Length: 165
Ligand code: S3P
Image 1: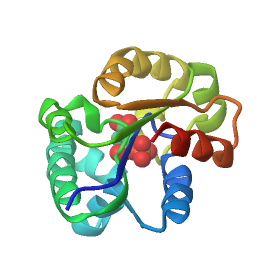
Image 2: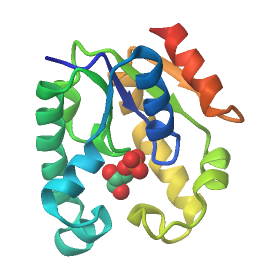
Image 3: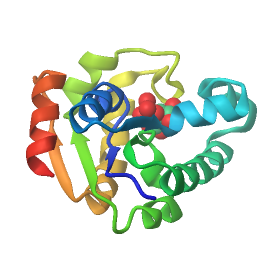
C-alpha cells in the first residue's frame, strides 16, 4: 500500500490543513509523519531537537516516512525538512508528490517567530531565506506537481492540488 498523495513543502505552508481537506474530498484518510513521530516518541518535535539535535531527528523522521509510505493509503504530509535526507527523497520515487510552495515574505507573515518550530525561533526572515534557498530545489526534485499558495485560501489550494493530480 502506498499513499495516493504525498504533500511536501515548508513548515507553515498549510500541509496539514490542505492535506485534511484533500483527504476529505478524496474520501481517504490523512496522516502526518510529524504526528507519527510525536506519538511514537512520546515527546514533542521541539524536545527531540533540543535533546538529540537535528541529525538524530532526521534519522527518526526517515524511519517514520518509510513506515507511513508502506502502511498508509491516503494523503500523507511530511515534515518540512524531510526532503533534506537523500534516502527519504529516494523513498518518494514513484509516488504522487505535491509540493505546496510559498515565498519568503508569505512564510514570515504566516509563521512569524514560532518557538514550537525550533528552526524559526530566532531571526525568522533570515532563517526563512536560508531554508528556502537550501530546500526549494529538493522539493522540486521530489515533486510531481507544484501548487503555489501565496495569498490563497486552503480551499483554493486544495482545488488546485486536485486539478494537478
Ligand atoms: C521542520 C518542519 C516541521 C518539523 C520539524 C522540522 C523543518 O514540520 O518536522 O520542526 O525542518 O522544516 P512541519 O513542516 O509539519 O511544520
